[in-house]
Length: 359
Ligand SMILES: [Mn+2]
Picture 1: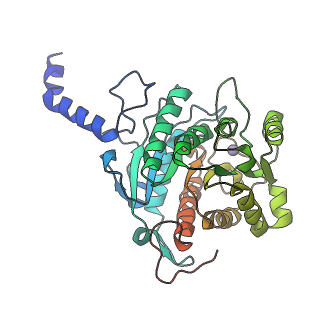
Picture 2: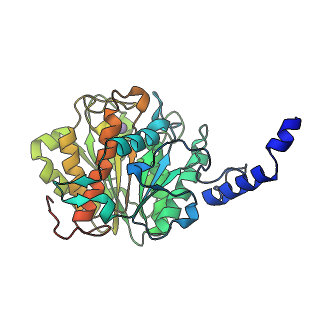
Picture 3: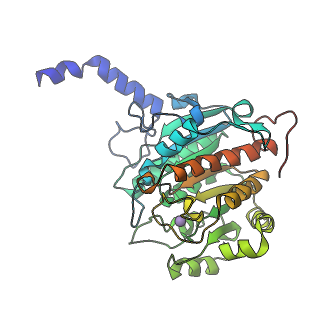
């Protein structure tokens, strides 16, 4: 008890107050006001995404092009958890193996984009709704500053607060391109707004109409009937893996963009890694055989980003089920593919002088 007196002296308390200011004030529903919006001091990842700068004082977010923010939350998983370690694995693989340069696309992300990593949002592991409040507030903070958010999940429950945080900062309507083997549009799973339910609640937001929701990759021996019924009743669009086989990736890109952009001012990308076949992406909680290949998904991501996006999330990367980090690697490269396409197509950052345009 004596030791505690000097170990937690005024200096320590000043530091705690400073970190609270750096990490911003938490959402209103958080009772303990010593909890900040972004985790400070206690880092959950050793590297910032793509070895970018870690922004310790979140108040310094200003005119950067891109902000990476982790949502290490897996309280929405109905069965196999582990995605709380997703942000750390994505950061690690992007920093250790990823290069910001892609000669095929003719882009160097580091010279074309000012990127920062805000670290992780302080989620409340046992409480979906409080975590939603924190995540929505964090995304709002980024969107308000017109910075492109890349949210590193976490399970797909975060899909709802991500759109909720974004929606007030879009003048008109938002379209959603949702890549997934599961439709994730039931009102509840196990009586709560878990990872099978984000798009029910997201498309209840007035400026995120379900008619602009396009779900790509749905199918296989997964998911409930409720979800598909909701999709049908709400006039959302489902494109199956069989559709991709039948019409080809190029036609699917065109069709999805047409739906997402119909009378909207912005499009949000929600990428569930389980849309990729478990042979390539085993590190996920709810794998389904017969998914897309990495080549198909990377081409699709380039195509979707070519028309511009307002932000993206990557969800369901679950390192405890991964092998040789291949799922996290694919996740990291997917994000880079989106950013590269946004740059070469003049939608974000500074274009290279002689851009190659695969799209
Ligand atoms: Mn899924």
